[in-house]
Image 1 (tube, rainbow, N blue to C red):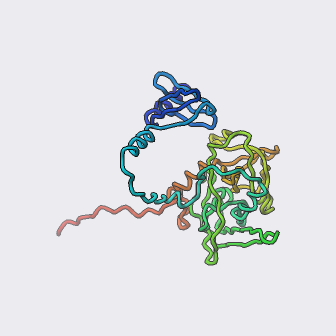
Image 2: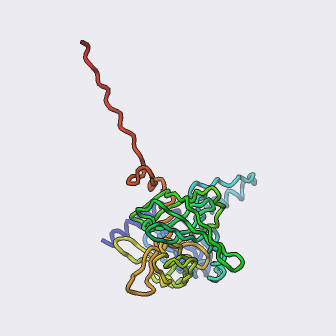
Image 3: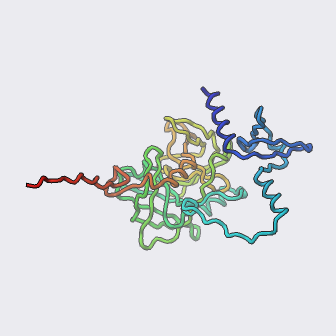
Length: 324
């Protein structure tokens, strides 16, 4: 069964992926369809077999469309510069990683990212969260706000060596994903300022052993920082894959961000094993991006909490009365 699934994936990849030429050390090259590009290797289908080429043997990767573009450029007059395409709604709603940035120390990153991490309070308890854009939209766990109607968000600013607290009480639930344990909230206080926000990274690019750190409010202790490594990125629990980390996680961390050393969110913390230490789990950030990109499908309606949308009555068939 596994072999059949693997062959299907390769077949689908061959249809969709463009051909490319991989220039190797020693003046050799390989031309074929790129099936996958990983950190340490490139997998190429050359028709009759599949080659796994180590990255340290690759000088350049040149795709066919890039070669065609170079050929056309060499024989065509220079064109006028075109304006950059407009960002999509999803790109404008949250920030994603761009060019690889330099890794920094946890101390440096906490100073710049700390104010983007908040404490989410309800009558039933508290959790953590983080802003995804300056307009006051934030992510937390579904179980933090489940069944609650009164939600407040506390933001902590580092000023003059002290934490200053600001509480926002007009918080609306925008979208909920019960099975993904994610919630999208929005601060709607009239005096709300622009907020510091985070960058969403790529959990697929993380590797086991990478250093990670969490910021949150375990047991209500705001702006607590814990550091660890990525233990595994494919921990399966009840049919769902999670990132497992040794960073210390406790009640109150739920909904908080898990950062890499480039300051990008790679996961949303949501649980731990209570009878052990260093066994914390986070929702991969790719799941968060999917939730945000399809937030309309998870929309929450305060007038009808059990259904994201309100439907109108279907039109009734017009009844004809017989003439007397």
